[in-house]
Length: 365
Image 1 (spheres, rainbow, N blue to C red):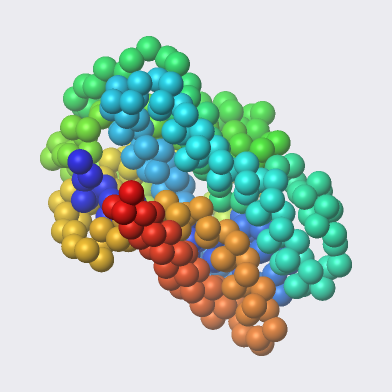
Image 2: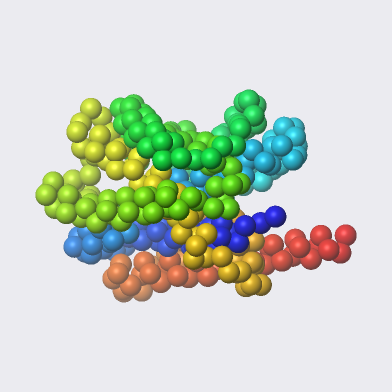
């Protein structure tokens, strides 16, 4: 049985990721491959404002995806058995990742580079990506595949009621592990396969917290935890812009490096903020969806079915739209929203078409 609140939240998060990637493509601070060839960037003041308004969500939204995946993983293993579960995950997650890493992503990066007037070969785009075997946004499914197989081979995870003690404990573990991990793998560093190792503490932590909380947590986050996490998230996000000003972080492209890793107090502060936001934020978002996003009709059901395909195809769509708009003499403040809105619509439309055809084929067989 599907849960409408989780489905609706998934749609919103996928749309947010697509839109966020569109913005990053025109940001001086970078974070999306189009920033390597972009023709315009945001005004520094606009970029700082966007970072203050939207940036904090970037610290925990990906963790929320892993949290939701973890919620349903133990039950899926129990229903299917270990062998079938692993086979399904290899097909559903492994196939898109490998196809993207060795074919799709280098092809569309090559298109973007040539569209920018940089005459590089496809082979160069494939072999000279940093990191090698960059799969674009599909690093997420590659890492999720690793976590899923590891849990399948591990001892069964017993579902339990999540308490405030669990929330605080996981926050401390994620924050501490993030700081220590970034002594070796700084934030935004690349590893072969684009594994995002610097993000693993929060991704794995939330995956396991979801697995422990299980379906009961997906059905209802306790009121006490919901209210507490909501207050923590709102307070943290409200304080961040003030703290940034006090710390002199007014230009992210120039001031971000000390926060990315190493034995620095700035890196510790960022790790602590991420730990707070990813744990509290994921629980709050699930709880908010359970209380505000429970309605579902044919259209929203279709969007929910389309969300995974939309996530998979977003990268090529974003690069194509940005390349197509390149000749237009428009500022980044206009191009980025146009690319983002267009990519959201096109990605979900493709997802709708694919899943509708799949459903029709299943009914006819």
